[in-house]
Length: 124
Image (cartoon, rainbow, N blue to C red; front, side, top):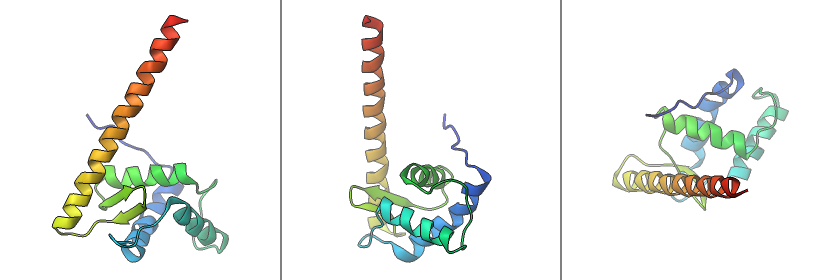
């Protein structure tokens, strides 16, 4: 069962802006780094182009991207080289599957780490 990722009202307003950023500034060969995206949103806020409470940091970016993916709003891929919008072709499909598999591996690693911490706690 999938659990919904919820956003604040401010964050929901940022979703279409983030999607537009990916549509206009990224592709397989042009990836956006998390820090770069955070800087873009901070500049936009400072210029009065967008309004949101708190900082736009990597955690907020990841939350927004997870929301976009969960709600199937846009095909956002990621790897160590950054984030990008997948193309609507076989290459894009392969990139999306690779991103999904990477997320699944990371999730399994986090579950294993949590299990190890529980085991340590039970031995204390």
